[in-house]
Length: 374
Image (cartoon, rainbow, N blue to C red; front, side, top):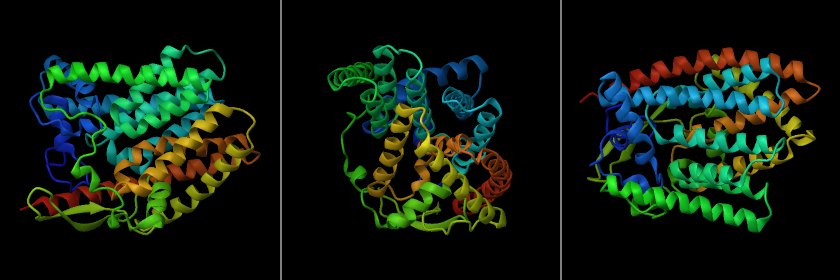
């Protein structure tokens, strides 16, 4: 029911639209203004899965999402290893990414943000590799184009990665090349998908999500960004105005929920996560290695936070875009003198977060059923 429901009940997600984007060429792909190449990139593999395994559209979509989740966690592990995290420690922090609230809640349903999150991780991998070996500018153009393809604001990661590795004139040329790649592919997409918008177009619908009072202000955005992304708090219900007919629909939200309110596990996990983030920040600041990676990571984190100070109502909706950034930041705790403490706390957090987040997911499914029952 979560997959096929067309409302915004599941934390303002658009699962029905995403399924249409991935499976239906004649659908209204109106979100290509902010997700430029999403239909083109996802349609062919989804259709292949449908034909090869002879399954229906929804199952094919979830098969693609499952494969994407596997690629996501593998890429996170590879990134941690490249920057110098030991095998056991990289595995531990990869598990932390798996049990985060963002992963559990957003790899369970089809949304564009899972694809955008993977593109950000790939950008970071290229930056990390470039610290040890020379990477062709062609690869930078490709990953920059990829970061733009799924979500236009994520292009900032591709642009920053290029700027820290090349002189500004060369970086500008690579960025223009990346833009041209997307333009060409978007033109191809338009031949196959008749109802697409020019990317970068700010529609009247888009403007509705800028500086919304429902976001609760800076403090609520910050706590959602730093805490709800990892540890799911108690889920609340509020009424939202449906744009097409001005009717009210109930939706699930966490924006103004208190940190640690989900359960005793949630409260304990919030304390432990705070300590790990603190140790990670310490390691990040005083580390003498990974200078380029740390610069891109810092700018990307700050950029994501600044974006959501202005845009969006439910910050948790976008949490997959920044949870890998937070996990990598936390992993720098292993590069401090408090390494053993950091590993112990991370092991404890994995257990607490897993118990809490899966409990909250079960509650979310029950609440969703109640809110969508006529």
